[in-house]
Length: 465
Image (cartoon, rainbow, N blue to C red; front, side, top):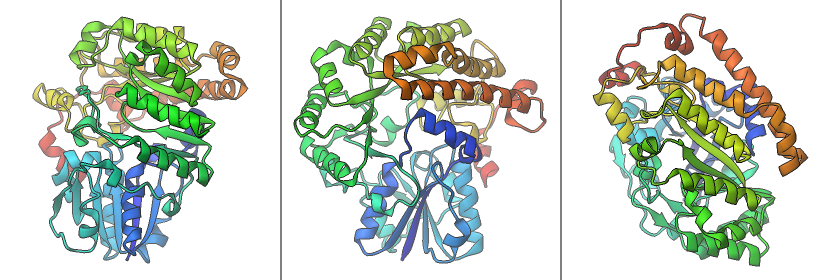
């Protein structure tokens, strides 16, 4: 059989301008799930292709003529795009549709309106049986992998859209349980691959010619001794990439040996969840860090030439506009290389979502807006439009043109050019949003001008059918 995996992207993310801004932010990559599952099916004798809409155009009309099964991996914001494609496929031909991923795991009944099968959770142990018809359930419960060394490496030979950076997952889940996080719930319990297994995959990507790599673990440095061992092996075997990204927490600043090894192994970019400089807000989301941790992390990464992407959550119940602005100013003060201002988003399956439902604070059932860039709930300390304005202000203030020279001096000419490009984009985005806020029918118009009514979750499935 011919099987096609598609990771869909909403309309905005398929636009050329958005893809251009993505190149300024970092190198293109592909999520590992479809490459792992597709590799399993390929090994079983099936013809498999994988497409990432964020990175390239998918010719669906051509694929419809010869594909037997379409598989979609969905997050909340790209679920409507997946549903639209799935409905189009099912109306046009007899190809079956499978849907999995974070959103489908939390909302399986909704996803089942658009698919022949929905796989909840981890799909490695069930995907072949579903595809070959041995499992016929509408909603299929995935089986968590106990020994992650048994999971095959992602198969990049089946990827048909551009990809510059290899993604490596050395763990699944996270030992922390922030209230807004989806992955720590889908991939529970927290599990680790052996260091030998991780190194085998890294060697493979060097042989394939990748110049960039991302450690996609929710928290690569959660087990510091294990992270050190991986770094030591990378250094000893000369397996450094030009640039390697990882997710970390502020507590990495407490281990000088770890920081030294991260630097020597070329783990050059880290996204750290600062979230807020308001301790009450941090405690409310179970972040498990304090203000001093955040300050030490900024200084430590700067010392070891690790470029910090500062992640700030906008709209926490205990934060005001002033708190948000203090966080942005702090990110600038530690010479953070990039900023990720993320509007608090109540993703289905998280405590934040449940709380918003119970308090009648959801203001829309349009899943495309659940992307950390759009306000989807009634904040405690400001209006929805005020919070939306703070999001755009954060990017505008952080990516000012004055910072270009400083970033170029610290990190080099290439990163100065990227900073300049991001400064331009941070001005174009708000300009477009403000125009849209005056056009009736757009999400921004409704946020700015409409008295929001509570979005009943029971009606969301109907809305997307």
